[in-house]
Image 1 (cartoon, rainbow, N blue to C red):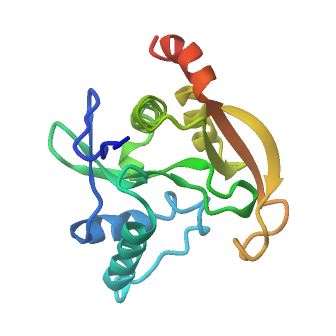
Image 2 (image 1 turned 60 degrees about the vertical axis):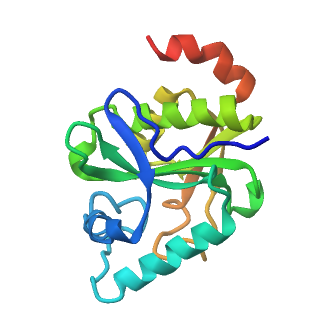
Length: 199
């Protein structure tokens, strides 16, 4: 079965688009906001020098390793086409859940608290379960990242268990700071709860 690409899909407020090198400046600005990156790299920031080339290499890896229907996408606001951030639906790179389908996202700070992450996450879950027919979608975050956990819960995912990210993955944090959580929803539970999540 051929599974369609989600590029061009829309929700009430949002549009998914191909993530390209043209987004490099927007990505760099987002990645240099200490609040956006607080639970990712501690808000250390990165210089523009070399960033465009690193982005090109990252996008090349995505193109080589993922089929079009499992990838990273830019998220734009339909009203003015503003770049809001990125979302991914991809095979997990973590050894514990190798090849399980993982939902992930990063949004500009200006977009927080508006339900945008939840709206986009629900759209990707619907896409995963109705068109890609995956059995389960999961998401990972640090245990102390309360905003991300709320998005997962509002989108319909539920906590499954705690774990600790390896020190080599985030060496700038101690063991307590690396405490993390896994959330997930199965296709069956998503279909059962879809009506409630829209209320």
